[in-house]
Image 1 (cartoon, rainbow, N blue to C red):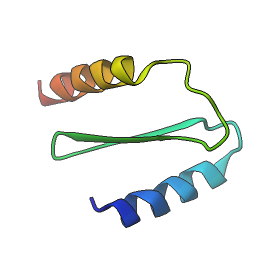
Image 2: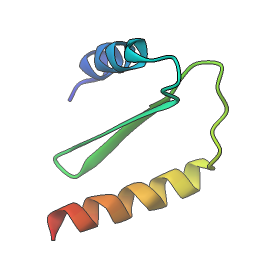
Image 3: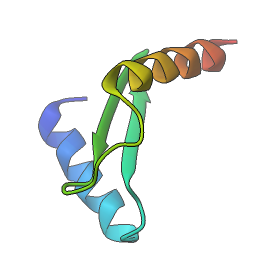
Image 4: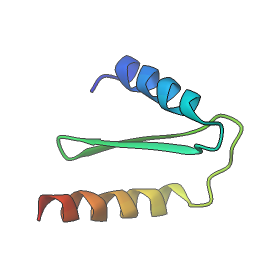
Length: 61
């Protein structure tokens, strides 16, 4: 997924509901994610990566 497509998809998802804080997409074992602008993540980038890796591994099983 190219960055422009991902950004557009994030905008569409965030527009669905103002309570959506985070968008994460897995494609070809790659994880793309974005926080809503102006919102701080509850998790560190390191934790996001670790959770993403585990999710990708579980989807493969």
